Length: 256
Image (cartoon, rainbow, N blue to C red; front, side, top):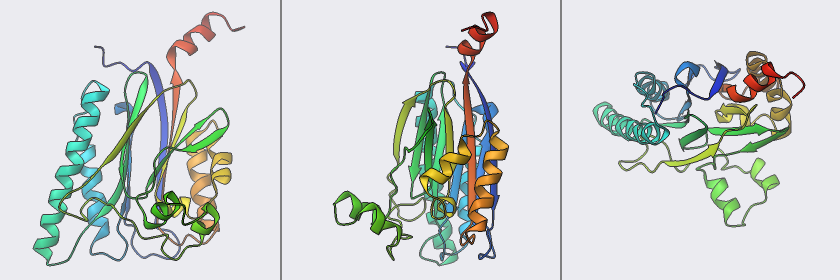
């Protein structure tokens, strides 16, 4: 199978410490040439969360990305498990309870994407003017919503909304969720830490992701989160997929 994607990818990323925190515990990976993106958010209040997020991103960045999506997903899963073990060992060495980080990873195949995650960092799909969250937060509030004990509106202001139930490094055994989606021409993916999603509504995020310019979209999203108070670190990636087959048809017959 050819390793040449049937889609052309353009993306941009930005991470910001925000206006309250002293250290940026977030980290991003933006590798459109490898069709690989990730956001990691070190666990606030725990020892050296910035070390945890950086360790995750470094592991993914050194990844010799396999050819097929099946191989990519399997390798990504194995790397996250390996970092989990490294973080557990590092916590034991430092005599602290845990060193951890949320993570969301997006990896593209030829005509589909896969994504893996643990925690409340998210990936959204923007398609035909609609922004849809693809991941489901691993958090106490999300669990309460799933059981029908909280409405979406109540969840926005719940005192436990920052408490996550899963993260890389949090426990000896890590459960990673994953899923896949077929690609359409013009699809845009938004990856972010909760420093963005806690400040902006889905409609506000959608209005910025609608921009054809990934860099402009990323900057406007981060700037809007900062304008709301920037209470947490903010990390944003926007990745745009263009179907080369559709582009070729347009060039051959501009009336199509």
